[in-house]
Image 1 (cartoon, rainbow, N blue to C red):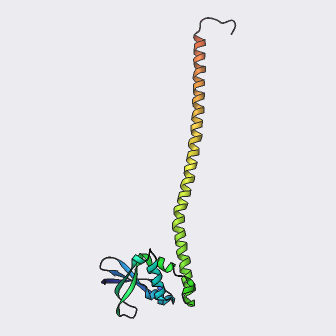
Image 2 (cartoon, one colour; image 1 turned 30 degrees about the vertical axis):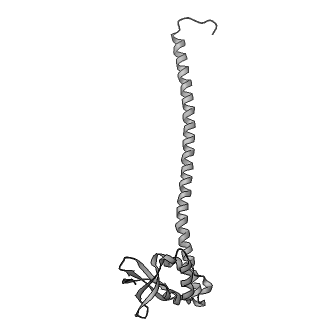
Image 3 (cartoon, one colour; image 1 turned 120 degrees about the vertical axis):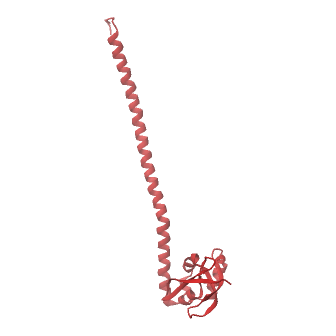
Length: 176
């Protein structure tokens, strides 16, 4: 059994205040039952589903904490880092009708936040790729221009050399 330090409000689920509990070891956990009760979903079924999930199972633990009624009791909890994803995993058909739209609104917000997070990375990559292609195009164009300038410079130097050679030649040429 773990000893708790502080209770932190992390929000409301269907009008019910949900608290996280900061433990002495520095971890923060959230009791599962108050969330399930607020959503009108079967606690046992959700706990079984979470325990069967390889991501959530290691984050679930039994802890002594103060319930909403102010009584100290043992509660099944999930680590704070995973609670939001766990709520996202609850199927709307399994919650009470009055909580269904609230849960779906929450799930839409989660999906939007994930979209923004991952698309910002993708968008930056796309912009970076475009900038790279533009710069490579400029480099190709300048390299071609440099090649043309070197060719023109070589021809100009050859013409200058021919003019100087012709000017210094003392022999008149009758047939040039």
